[in-house]
Length: 194
Image 1: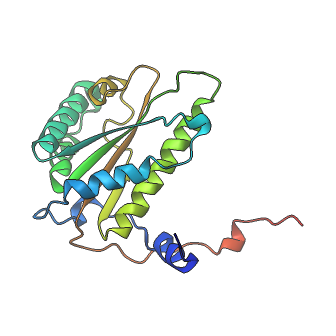
Image 2: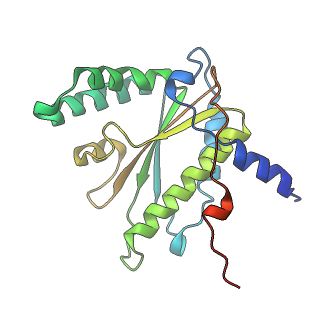
C-alpha cells in the first residue's frame, strides 16, 4: 500500500465538528459505512492490546429509544436543577442524526494498565472515527453532554461499574458545512530540544 503524506495532511486539517443542527435529517448513511467507520476505530493504539472500547450504534427507531432514555434519565436525575429546555433538547437532538454511536470505555481485566490509558485509547478510537467520517464526506460530532457522566446511564449502554461512558458521536450527511477552522501557529505549542 502507498499513502501520500499530502492526503493525510489534508484529511487531518479538513476534520470538523458538524453539530446536529447542521445535519441533513432527510438522508440516512448506509449501515455498511457506519460498520467500516467503527472497524477503523478499532485499529486505534491501545496499551496491552486491551481494546477497551465499547460502542453501541443507534439508528432508525433506536434513535427514539436513545432520546427517550436520555431525556427521562436527565429528568429523574436533575432534581431541582431540572431545565425544561435541556429536557426537550435531549428528546430532539438524537432525531437529527442518521446514526449515533455511544462511546464506552470497558475497563481492562488486568489492573496493570492505568485507567487513563484505557480512556486515552478510546479517545484515539474516536479520532479514527472523526477522520473516517471526514474521508467519507460525512459530518460528525463527539459530545460529552447530556447524560454522559450520570453513572445510572452506564447499564443502558452495556457498561459496568468500573467502565465509563465517554459520550456520543453523531453522524449524518452535511446540510450546512462548518466554517473553516483556525489554529494557533504550531510553533506556539511546541518546544524543540536539540
